[in-house]
Length: 233
Length: 126
Image 1 (tube, each protein chain N blue to C red):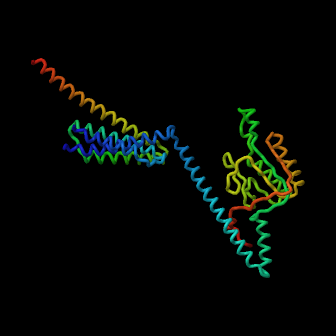
Image 2 (cartoon, each protein chain N blue to C red; image 1 turned 90 degrees about the vertical axis):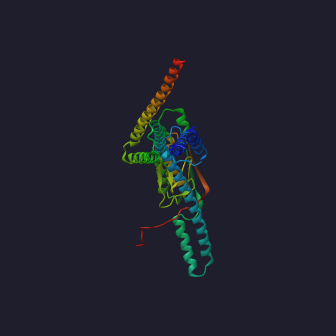
Image 3 (tube, rainbow over the protein chains, first blue to last red; image 1 turned 30 degrees about the horizontal axis):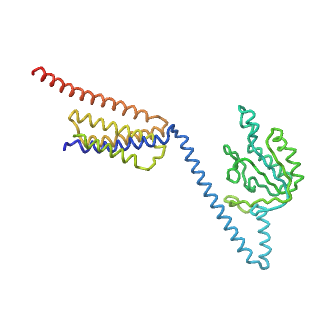
């Protein structure tokens, strides 16, 4: 056997392997763009993290229920008072589901308007986070006691922030239609929003529905409240 | 006859490449393509060396691996630095590939011509 046969064979195996492997990979992503791949990776990371958050939230809920059960077992004397205090603090903090009368505002993007004027800036036809923020502020000034948006309970640390084409509330992405539920005086809250942001949205032809209801159930905040820097003074 | 084993190697490599289900992360495709170029360059370089009768297996193998690795590394470094060193590697390998191909073609042509001349001479003699 000639001395070059073996090395050449080895090189041939490796190079044809590389070649076919590369061809196969390229065939799978024609018009490959590293940036889009990067964002795809990021999307999967975000999705995984969201799933993790969900499981952990469920875990927190289960542990909280367990804690409630344990606390309700020891109801003697002074503990009873303390328990009442805990319940009150939880309601204040938004850690319990609450019900009562209030209003429900349903907001959606102005899709019809965009279809009618297709070349216009779509930003003029979608609900932005500041619309929701203003509405929530107006509800608060009218004495809303509990507010949730698409079942995300607003508590003192809740954010309402624009993240691309969705809105982030309690670190959860919220997409239209937005259903804002608020417990409080229906009359006061209706007046407050009707004189402010709701009026502006209506004049821009957004599809809006405002209902006064006798019974609204607002879910508890699902996440965990943790104070790392704030200490009791 | 001599090239049976290398051709079998080609087929074997292609078979392994096509059956392997492992998916390379798309970010590394660029580096992989340089490795492909380097390996092709080595194959043609090897064939050229055989024709020039100065073939050395160790040179071929080390050249192959260092070329592929260093080229991929340079491309990576270029990505980090914001300089497209990737194209430098593609250019270098591409030029070498064509040069080797040209030399191989010349060798084949000359050997072919020699055979033809001899056979022509034979014909005249008859």
